[in-house]
Amino acid sequence: MLEAMSADAATDTAKPKAKPRKGPATIARAYFTALGQHDLDAAEALWKPGSIDRIAGMVEFPVPSPEFRAWFGSLFQAAPDFSFEILSITAQKDTAATRYVVRATFDGTGKFEGLVPNGARVELEGCDVTVVEDGLIVANHGYLNGADMARQLGALPPQGSIAERGMTGALNAKVAATQAIARLRDR
Image (cartoon, rainbow, N blue to C red):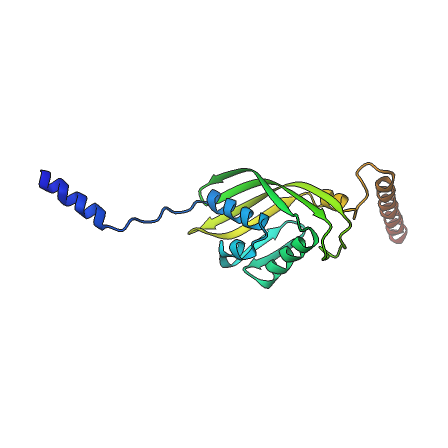
């Protein structure tokens, strides 16, 4: 019996140990850490080539790609102190949901989404749903409040302000005029 145990022990040490598979939470954490450090090489290395990154209502591009690098590169140029704070990561099977806060000062040297930096301070909470297969990201779906981001950047007036009420009134007047014209045409 001792000989059998010794033979098994020798066999166990001779077998190469498989590397533990990195789960979606580990991959998501690595991805957002790389972006927070402005390390596009490390971020792209976590993707299966040809997969798609989507930020709802803003942008969609394959990763790795020049489009990915250009979009994040212009963000980092426009907001050099851009950072992610991961609030929580919840994972199940091949999917991780990452809640985070993005913080940045829009005071860099490059434009972002056509806007020239104006010194505005931005703080937004967002959530990304990341799908991982074989240790690589195959899809990412990002969600954040684009209207809040536009307000903080100064592209939209502050919520509840006179300017916002004026914009709402102008839109409502346009809808009313369009409906009135349609009713006249239907006569």
